[in-house]
Length: 161
Image 1 (cartoon, rainbow, N blue to C red):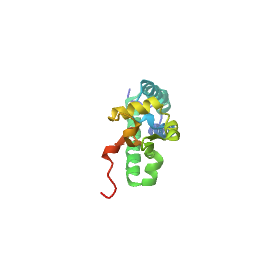
Image 2 (cartoon, rainbow, N blue to C red; image 1 turned 180 degrees about the vertical axis):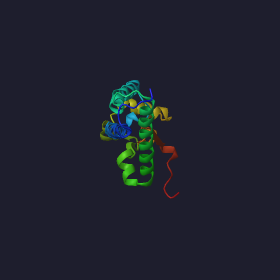
Image 3 (spheres, one colour; image 1 turned 60 degrees about the horizontal axis):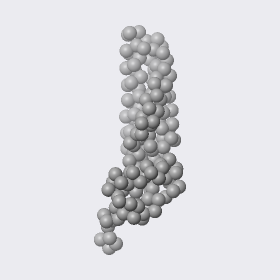
Image 4 (cartoon, rainbow, N blue to C red; image 1 turned 120 degrees about the vertical axis):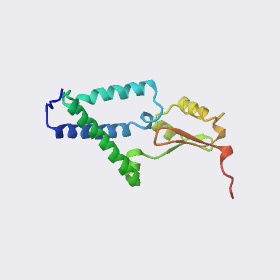
């Protein structure tokens, strides 16, 4: 229970490699994984965590091994958060930017398809933001968090204000 089966730095290296791998994979697969999760997205993340577990701990089930792995991943997450807070280019690279899905009542089909949102999912998100239809939308943005933000036409500032 308390005996490590490999050196402590091996746990740290494995944790860092898996953290970097998952960060890249989740960034490349899109923003859906970060916002509201569909049931299959949640299942994917749960299975993914179980899949990489042995790669992180090398089969070691000791308490210190688990603590070292957890501390490594938490530390890396803190470091990445600090770096993205202090560096706009790095933030854009890791977190991405907001994408305009709807502008002045017209769907940006290229952006919608790139985000892998069906038209029905987009329309449901608009309805959840109290939009009766596309004509009431000035902008709808897919934020880098996966949330969809809507600016209604009625809340749009008038020119000259």
